[in-house]
Image 1 (cartoon, rainbow, N blue to C red):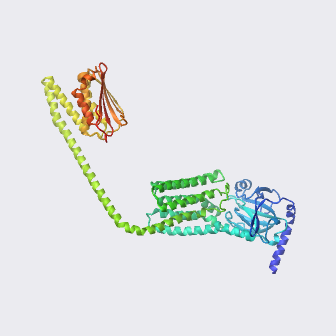
Image 2: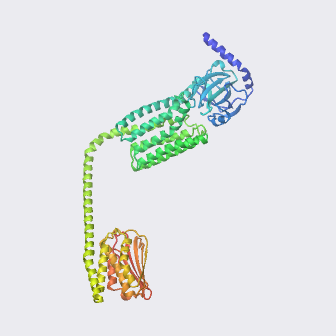
Image 3: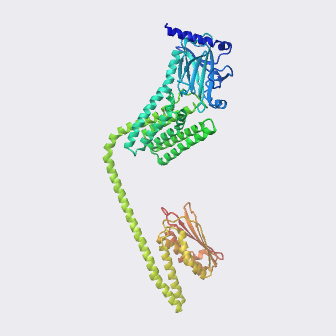
Length: 638
């Protein structure tokens, strides 16, 4: 034994003796509860409870200890209510040496927030910070602390943890185990790999791949999935850095805020990448909505932490958005099933499971311990793996694509030729329609200015010369028929209401002159797409004949015209009812009249129905029913 080793042993013994007075009382007190774990290397214990004092002082408290379960990784709210500036907590655990195997003991502790000091039997044996002012990030880092053999005594031994942090940060005491160093070293190595080494390696690989992909995007700006993937990697690196960092790289408070709020851009960028990669319908709107949700989540968390001590609501809302997007992307995959998209959905589902796992490990709820480490640092790498799989598949398909290029070009030329032919055909139809419209307008002008003008002049001369009333009536009917024909030529685009309005304008003065009151009752009706000039003339002739019969035979004082939508035999249509209050007639005597026969014939030509109802002394009703759509219909007899 060297002089230095001898001096260290004597110093440890003296320090142990100096704490004998405090430990003397402890010998009679009950030791803390602990769960034993027996392995091939010996027996370890994990403390189930400890005695706590919430105090920011730098020396071990002498009183005020209260027993609580272990771990207590969320003491922030309680500590902030009791302490003004710094936050601090002391945790004391006592155990019997006989319960722990091995000659060389070690302490394994994790999840302590943030600065950690460990005392064994009153002696300070470990600190995770360089100085009182130096920042430390111990919340995710496991610590394996060797206990000097000289400090271990038979019977009851005491471990005290002092954990401290600034008021704006969190405070908590994690799990504590003690046992043979060989046993705890293996457990520590596993924890250290998944919490620190693995997370560090995954995220440095992530930032390296992000840089490469960003350079690729600079060359291929149209492939926005490259941009979103590069942003995803960058955001996740910023978010995950605190998992493996030992100290904050700059101001601790600013680093904490960036870490908290970078979660939302990381998730939103990941979803934007998935949407852009799978290209579902309306993907630009989906991406815009996701970006807006990202801003909302940041603002929502900002308001949340001002009013409460936890941001669990914003985390659960974010998790809900991710799950909803998984469903949306899965539905998009069902419409276009590809292996690359399926792998991406699987990767996104795995990251969603990671998120559910990590939400349950949030300190202030702690639903479960799960894997014993946070899975979030591996989220970005899972998405990158799916993308690299897709790149590999694309490279393999590239050769096949080259072989199919000529065939596809020929097909495109054929489609373009067919589209050009269709376009030319449509252009010719439009020219024909314009020519027909122009010719219709010319005929209407000629009929109005030529034939119509001559008939009006002839009627005026006949009236001045007091010609035979039959001649005058003949000229008046000729002018009325000409007006009706001109009205039928006017384009109405299938609008029955407009067509009847023109008829009303023409006939209402004649009816008023005959002393017959006309009542119109028009309801909104669907257009009749098949109602061209020829069919419009048929309809107007039917109505003209009905009105003419009323004036000639009915001796009516009132006519009611009712236009309304009406379905017959499950076929949509419109109904034009013409009713008078005249003397009526017996249908059996007039059923074979030429005028009524012509009306029914015209109705059949329109694929409609003309129905006559009359009772002597109660008036007559003529109903013209026309279908909205004539496709597949057979002309019906009235």
